[in-house]
Image (cartoon, rainbow over all chains, first blue to last red; front, side, top):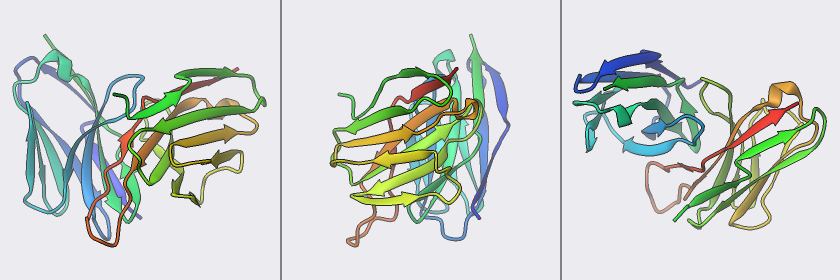
Length: 108
Length: 118
């Protein structure tokens, strides 16, 4: 059975303090790893898809990387508007298996 | 510009009173999904439609049903809501895997419907 574990559960940063979120996974046949951002009371917003180990993708202050066992979401010089829950999900066949998420708070 | 639309955004129902949640999409995607998300938990897939083919998850209670009358619309019916069914219900869509290739199939989510059961 696919498993996705995200750490830490919660992360509090000061504005401008860079950090990384971790997503470790076990899946028999990975077809893709996804990162989503979810604001309170809203649906997940798609950020990135990573296909294979060594791949990297960037969007503004966010950069996602992938190895064979884990993915990192690096946040460089975060701003308060980056505060949200970040969800990682792996795709095997047509199903997505989500992690529990990391709740990020960026204080001004 | 909304691509996946869910109505209503907030729904209050009484214990045991049937309720229907609605999802529509403007993406012309083949696949539509329903997820249940409880507070501080991961979204949990209930079922999905690939075109007209219904795919139920093994652990989805019989109390939850779905209909997809056409490509654009999909409904979630909860026949007899219990207190434990209070949650955010998320609809998502994707193109679907095709025989022509593509190793991933990105899902796009709607804003969700928050269901309260009194």
